[in-house]
Image (cartoon, rainbow, N blue to C red; front, side, top):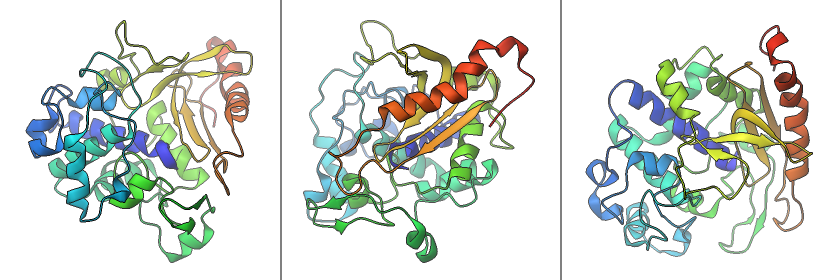
Amino acid sequence: MASVTKVVTALTAATLIADGSLDLEDRAADLLDPALVPDARITVRHLLTHTAGLPPTMPLWRIAGTREQRLAEIGRAELAAAPGTAHAYSCIGFILLGEILARLGGTDLPALADERVLGPAGADRATWWPDAQARARAAATEFQEDPPRGLVRGAVHDETAWALGGVGNAGLFATLDDARAIARVLAGTAPGPRLPEDLRREIGRDQLTLPATTGAPWRQGLGVRIGQELPDGSLAPGVLGHPGFTGTALWADPATGAVAALLTNRVHPRRERFEVLGARREMARLAFAPASASASASAGPRA
């Protein structure tokens, strides 16, 4: 699912916020070994909103050593901007966030997410660790030379997530039914987890203040994007979701209960060969443009 994993990580964080174990203004350096955090000003909110100033990614797979030694390299990262001053999409930020959640939850992130989000939502086959049967059914992604993995299948495509294992930025495997179950958590129609209404509103609230901007029509919520472009360049407003680099995406409209997921394979066998922006926009038109045009007459949620 590539970066759609970030939605599950963000929802796992939301469950800890809901039970009082975590606060958006908590400092990452107070929740982790401070040596892992390159700036003491970075907060949980910064990590969830890509405003920590951290780099988008780091070639941690090139560092020989243990998982802990690779993570320690993040603590030496140079910030592109002071925390809270600019929006810059960062997988590194979600890796740190996942480590925070694991420490607070007393278990690894995949187990914590399964317990708090995936299981309650009914995403029964979603996992960071697919078994042999699931790996055999997984779509092959990219032929990778750096690192020299060959054709990647049944293992996370993202190189940094692969080098670390069980992290918050990428690594989730899911079926279409699983993806829609996760989207229903964003829509507020899933059987669980149940989040307080004020926290739901905060997840879908634009978190950026000027001059910070995404540089795109969509805005930034807590771990989700707000608004999805349609083929004509307009925006389906209020739609929450996230795309993944491999060609995945999921969306939810809390106002109508409509959810959608698009699972394509953009990186097979090479990432330079395909793009799926047009398909995402058309999918959003099919799922959300009719709903937004007739929201007042909507008879109920659609899937």
